[in-house]
Image (cartoon, rainbow over all chains, first blue to last red; front, side, top):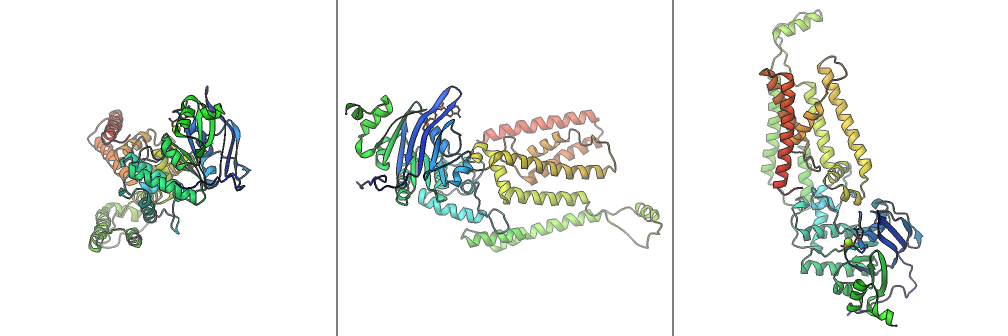
Length: 260
Length: 228
Ligand SMILES: Nc1ncnc2c1ncn2[C@@H]1O[C@H](COP(=O)(O)OP(=O)(O)OP(=O)(O)O)[C@@H](O)[C@H]1O
Ligand SMILES: [Mg+2]
């Protein structure tokens, strides 16, 4: 097992701080006063039952929703993120649970959507985009060949690979992955896990959402558990067992902590 | 043709498989022949000598011995070709076109990809405004003068033309040349009905029926092929 160094120990500044974030949809308080932070080179896992508010919380960071109240700080500075464009400006890349792909476009067009490679004349350079897509896909899903077909013709896992490729291609500093491996095969999942470790070593901060507690124990430095929109707690993975995490998810409390 | 060649060079540059040179040459040959043939056919229609005589007389001149003139390609056709080429380039090769297709396919995804979909909608409507302006100029030029209700209900025929040409009403799919072919079909239908003497109200009903049928087939077909 690799040794985990706590990034907070050496006095590093947090990359992202979410403070007391709240958002309601009609009567549903989807996120209710959640505070989280993320350091460079760290993977923070987000766990919780279906509808706990995990996706909603990270969508606030990625600019898809605007928080009703609360504060986002990036590298210590207050950040205003009102749209996905703003989030991209802070080098925040997101893999959405819904993948957010334009089904009628091919993989390359989706990968570069909003950030096309253009020729000197200002036209989209399809050939270059396709070549770059080929390169990145070779690292994620080597069996991927259907580059020029609309993504509606791809399998669930292939579509997910396209979404992952899009998030990691553009030198993100903060990466949000909402159940990135939900549709992936064993081999592809392992490749994504390797990729996460590699990106982490490069100093990215990663928010990872998954329902697979074992995978989370393996990949994350810290895990945060949400329940009904509220944060149950954040633990370093060395300090807890899988059972502790499970009871945090299901019962909403950490037995060890309560015992102490 | 130039674009075909440059596309080829680009592909070779990135190490993609390309068609053999002779195949590319045949394609270019066919395109050239088609263009020349089109011009030749339109030039083959000669203006009748009486009409020429009248024109010259209007300018106070005699018709020179053995003088003939061809109708040639009408300006409106040239304009159509120019607009089609420009719009195809915009749709296929520019970021704007890519964004329009992406937004048509999945507006949420487009927004999450950092596309300002609201501004984009405004842009699409202004492009449409420009094109409608051009078509209005052509339409009124053909009729010399007309009251301001010219083109009433043309939007229905335009929608029918686009759908017949393969544009998905749900968005994100379609081509410019498809829409032009669709327009040709709609216009053939209309002119044909006028020639065989179908009453004007009946013509509108037929156009409406075609529109409904086209939309229906569009929906059924896309469900079959597994689109949305
Ligand atoms: N756009 C929306 N409009 C209304 N309610 C919403 C919307 N998005 C989320 N919600 C509600 O907010 C709550 C949290 O949803 P969220 O998608 O964040 O859950 P989640 O933790 O990601 O669950 P899962 O594990 O199933 O992905 C749910 O009760 C959901 O019904
Ligand atoms: Mg979710």
